[in-house]
Amino acid sequence: MSSRRTMLRCLLACTAALAITAGSARAQTPSVLQQIISRGTLRIAVLPSLPPYSKVTPSGDPEGYDIDIAKRLADALKVKPEFVVTDIPGRVTSLQTHKVDVTIADFTRNVERSMTIAFTDPYLVTTMRMLVLDGNKARAITDMGTGEGIKIAISRGGTAERAVPAALPKATITRFNTQADEMSALLSGQVDGMAEDDFYNTQAIKDRPGKLRQLDGSLARAEIAIGMPAGDADLHRVLNLFVEQFNASGDNATMFKKWFGFDQPAITAHF
Amino acid sequence: MGYTFTLRTIYPYLGTLWQAAGLTLALSLLAIVISIVLGAGIAILRRSHSRLLRFIGAAYVEVMRNTPLLVILYIVYFAGPSIGIRLSSFNAALIGLSLNSAGYMAEILRAGLIAVAPGQFEAAHAQGLTALQTFRYVVFPQVFRTIYAPLGNQVIAVILASSLASAIAVDEVASWMETVGSTSFRFFETFVVAAIVYLVLCQAVNLGRLGIGRMLFRQGAVAR
Image (cartoon, rainbow over all chains, first blue to last red):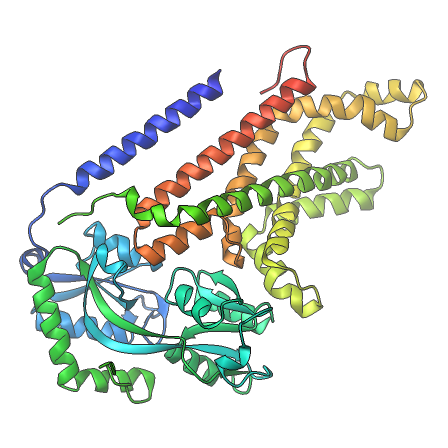
């Protein structure tokens, strides 16, 4: 029975792979802050196509709001920035495997996520809102009722996973990997709305005049923060101080206006 | 502090994994059956006496083999509505996957048809069998025996390719992997679990195929 033997071998290989992953994870590493200082560079994970947060220009250099923050941070640490362009899972895994020191990539923090990586204080707070075709009957999210018979496009595993069912318990959740796919689904009529970042929606409406609009009301509040590996208290201390002063000095507001074209909403929450 | 691989952290998400695995299995098995039927038709077209039918068969195979499945899925799901064909995610994925796999199935089946000696067609004709009877009783039993091994490859290829259906919002295993990874940030755990699920699904379907083969070809050597 060669097939049974093949199966056994595959299982053995899997077990071995697991053992290796678990073993290497326990290896000792010097503090991340010390590594950054010794190396003289700050390695930053960024996303390739999320303008105006970040995008890779034809010359290969990234640019955008998140990129300017990264450059400012490297400046403050007196080291050179080194950008590592990655994807959605890579934002997290590259921190966990120490391929990068920090992630600055429209990263929404929450308690569950902070159990695997650390987040700084937020440098931006956005709301999640509903984008619909201009011809949609609803004016506000509440006009959609329980959401029965309504399809909503969301980003897989994002803030909307909880926010949309909370607002529209009977709506059908339609999951996509990228915002571009969500947009295609909305424009082709495969979904009735897409739940996305207010800033993204605002830009999308501007890019397609007369086709799209946002419904009144917000679905969720998202705190955007810098991500770093868990367990490095020194780096966390330094990054938090950087974010606090970056926010307080007004530099953040200036940088935001440069990339988004409108004033930055308040970062503090109303309790 | 390094990363500690902890499967315990994704236990809360295992409930949705079974649904996802069921969807992957349903999507793949249906696509395999449909693409065998469709592929058989195209393979026969390619052996036709009519030049036009041969061309249609060859064109179908080349178009499907030379376009990425992802593009076909996008066309069926996103472009379909603009010509009035609005399909659910699952149906769009099933059609895209079947159309794509049929291109490969056609080539596998054609190889099987070529392996049947022309003399057998003549003999069947001489016995007074109709064309349909010739295929049913003489040709296909031999074709299936010849193609059993390459068919196994294609069956597994379809199951693995079904992971692309997540791009058009089908909540199958790859979708579960991305969703749970992004929710919990436990990507390593979800990657490993998804890999094991695909391994088990592919092996289960492959063992099923071998079982069917053993039943069909009791006498003589079993093609693996």
